[in-house]
Image (cartoon, rainbow, N blue to C red; front, side, top):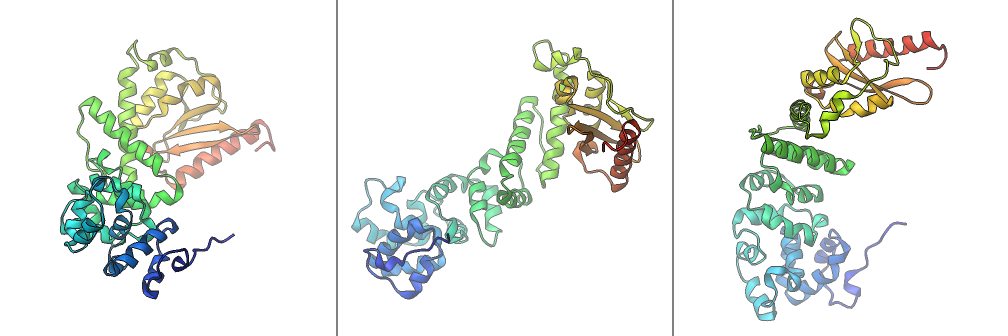
Length: 336
């Protein structure tokens, strides 16, 4: 059922002008009553609905705002509303600057959430994030959510911010942020300097390279969990290899593949030993790593990627699929 918004002028609050009422419908419904009361008590604040949605919501909920507890009363309210907008920003804990006012003015009404706005206050003290937000035409809920987390990622660029924000709709931002956080932590542990990431592809490549290097170091450390992987026994390859598609038949070969290709395939050693997945190194038409899994009928491609998880060419994918299908058909016609 489609959710309808009540006429905020008929819920026990003083009526507001038609223009203001039309603007209210752009805001989350939980703000309607408080915004209506604010405008009825202070008609001059109706302009905030049009020009700065975030400040409008902050003013409407000011009595519960943490920076104003104990001093918010009618006299203070009237005094504050006569101040410049940057001064109002400062009272709510945002930087008391014109830059902060402009950034807040870009936040879409439907994105105005008290929790997200409170997290934004601290984030706006990061110069790189202020620069990112100042160049956006509008700030949606996705960008607002991401901004509140941005202080954890000093090596992320504006381009990466926009790309990750776009993935929020697909619910993939958690995975991307986890990879970015892992890069920061691995580099910190290793005393490594990170580049400024411009894309998710760069993040993935860096992450897999750092993981592969750490696995190689930990492989010979008796105190590390990876040490036990050295003694695993891999089963015979389920599909015979060729001169150009070679089975990876031991943990040592798997580690070498992971380090050569800068990815984290070595973490799958136990799965290979259990027979649920198998890896091959592809030499032609280009260098790549292949993993196959069984689907109760036949073996099929799980992943096929180049160095640093780069996509392979259509020619490589066609070659691998042809080899895999032909080998299984010859062994058991009609299965795949």
